[in-house]
Image 1 (cartoon, rainbow, N blue to C red):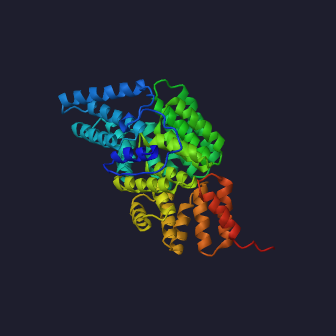
Image 2 (cartoon, one colour):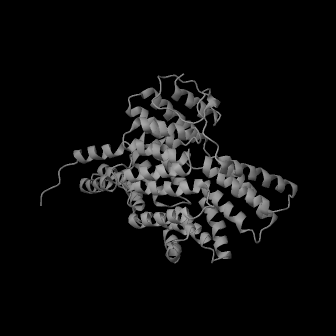
Image 3 (cartoon, rainbow, N blue to C red):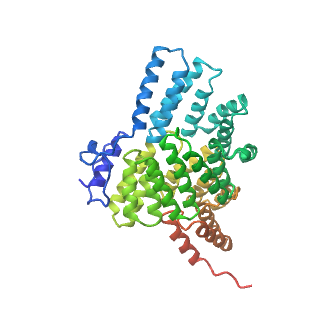
Length: 446
């Protein structure tokens, strides 16, 4: 069995699916321990932070069992579960964090802000934003002086598409932009509003502050670098993104989130071997469907249609095993490849009942376009572009929808914007944008 096939079997075991695959040898060298799937390779040293965190979880859980009416030990265990979930992508840890936080609040519903904050964060991780909003709003109202509560509220507001509320929240927080709990959230808000340079400045402020904080977990340091890398890549600055991701891995070696981002970066630069290498290392920690999709596209670009098909199939299986709504990246992969179009359309509509943000409307618009419902897709795309966000993917979708609607001048404008903002917005779609531009009728001379 080839190494990619072995990896597929291993990752499918994590979702309870058996599969027998064949195929020729893979293209990358997997680094790190994989003895669980029958290979012996050099072990990556266990991070001391991770060992301490696991020991602390066991300690607080034991104390909570000895005092079933207590609140603080449960709240602390919930915090640690959530930290481990960020590091490993383990969804069961998110659910444990939610359960412990809820039990802590049942035991003590006043003066227990730490449990409420963990509960709100766990609900955000589960994409249950409307419920998270209620919890976070209660926290913010209980202590308006707590900047982190207000910043987290603003973040949930813009995730839900409540942009007027988010604008008011962040306008009131601008004077505190150097506070670490505010800076990164304000940066994301600036990016949504189309102020990329301001967002970049804020993320550098966050990194400067994080460097002065020896108490921060290394995964959080890595997350700040990851956020900067993602911003730079969306701005078309792939070399800067490369640097930021390298710094993230220096801070937290083996971070699956950063490896997934590196896989995507390699793919958009058409370094297909690198995309497979980084992607396979990422999915050994977390079976992210979007990363499986990236690996599938990379194998397809290299001409290995068998492996591309297997990874695409694993991607679909893993999506079907994920709880809740499809994440946007998974939905777009399925739509781009003509898979589960009607199913994604149904889920996109359902999600918009509570979460009416621009990227939700983008998924809806693309699903409608793929369904041949161009007029409806145009209307949804107007909502997706409503905040002035400078995202090449949004402009590409708008351009292709305008082209299908018979609006060549508008299609040309959007497609040119997509390539100008970021010629690396997706692995394959920039080439599609260039082909569509070339096929448009020439502009009339004035």
